[in-house]
Amino acid sequence: MPVADTSQLISGVAERYASSLFELALEAGSIEAVGADLTRIQALIDGSADLKRLIVSPVFSADDQYKAISALVEKFGVSGLVGNFLKVVARNRRLFVLPGIIRAFRLLAARHKGEITADVTSAHALTPAQETELKAALKGVTGKDVAVNVTVDPSILGGLIVKVGSRQIDTSLRTKLSTLKLALKEVG
Image (cartoon, rainbow, N blue to C red):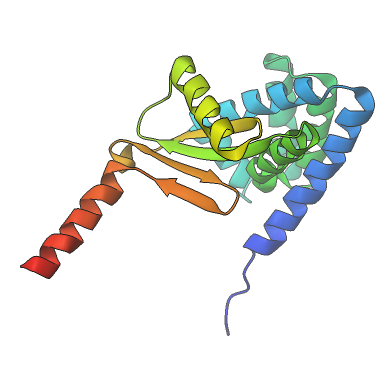
């Protein structure tokens, strides 16, 4: 019996929650503040293996997740709308889709501002100057303002992988080395 593909289901749940949060933020006129809070939450998730485990593990009860999220919200001073939203997500046992919710919210916010989003993978964290230069270069190519989501992945060794919509530009050292390896195999 084949295993069902749950990625579509998770994506749908994340998009529905993100859409609800976006509508609330739009009504409150706080899209920027909500986006900033979500960025802080994502940074906390990325920086803590324990928090990641709390979010994805079904071992924790809804009550445990709710208490942990409530403490997190209070400790880091997350705004009322995002704080309450996170508590609802925890109560509904949907914390496992939180990273997807954050991504979907960013897309909705960018679309609302007339921006497009570029997912950038870099071997090292980008400096603010590099990020500004990258945004300017992408704006020159796309003709629109570009919001950049940067992910650090040391395994690409160097360079960047930039995804804008359905287009991808891969200038990573890992890809260049793989291409060279294939070319050498064909010759030898």
